Image (cartoon, rainbow, N blue to C red; front, side, top):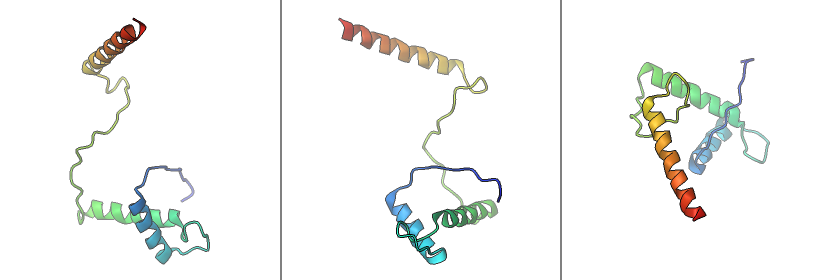
Length: 100
């Protein structure tokens, strides 16, 4: 695994506690901070999750959460442009009221 990339994400405290507990069993460390090698633990978890999702033994429910998308030429629509114009108009109106 010579080609590595840093990945940062937010993790709920209870999930991090579970990761650390598993890590302390599988990859114990003398480090007083976590007591385990979190990177190795997370790699194991991600690999196992990808394998389970790929072979169909686990199916994730559909998410209601909308994913942010960038405003590039490929996915920028007229609706997006109208939405921006509406927001700009609302901001200008508020600014006008604040100045008055």
